[in-house]
Figure 1: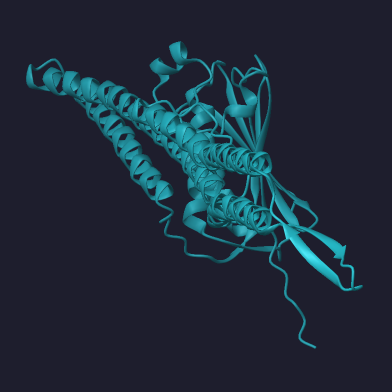
Figure 2: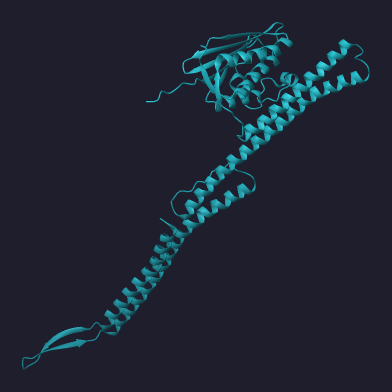
Length: 383
């Protein structure tokens, strides 16, 4: 029952009950006062007369006592009616208000781990339900904010460490050149190449961080176009092969897709996907003869790309989380390898935006296979 209806019913009962009792008492009192004893008397000439005989003094006393008792009863009933209705209204108002006060105090103290449970459908109950919904959303918002702050702190820590390593190396080699340590053309060439490689690492890291900020605000600049699968992935393999060759890692490329197969994709972003996966494989390569294989396959409505390495592999407990932002399989070992921890999360985001997906299988000590799929472009015939 709504609060307005409760108040109307309560005041109606408080007013109506005593009025009815008072009216009944007045009616009984008036009837008693006017009541007379009527008898019939027959005279000697045969006429009949009605003779009214007033009540005795004892009867009058009883009437006054009865009237007094009636008024007292009405008064007592009035008090109990008012108390009952007042308690009814108080419970309907005070109970949710007390719960609201406790809930407000909890929020004031920063405690959001409680539930405001109020039954009913009146205005106060609806207010409590709205308050509970506000508390729930506030808790979700606070948890999300705390998670973002934690991720940002972790990102800053990772970036700081990953920038410090190449900067220290660059500084050391520059000092070596300034001090005349690189006193031969061979040494000078080696120092300059090392400085160049380290600056490339920093450039890649900064680009990755910039791209991450675009992911967080859903502002990734995609330029979709038709890409011939054979031509596109052959070019990617050739580009990656040059980088792997400088690192002493062998690349094996195989294409099992027909020549006319086309996908709709952003070539630059898919190239970023491949480079991030390859870069991850290079980072954790622990074999003297490193081998990375790229296979492109036709799997119905999709083309599937497999990138396999013979690195140290990923543990079963870590495998489901490798595409999460900032997740590192082994912090103590990864800290020496560098990396912001967002490379594979960028891969996942790009492929999801292309309508594809990415997953991995791995065996520790043997290697890891990364899979991703892209939907093939198919012409729809006009009817």
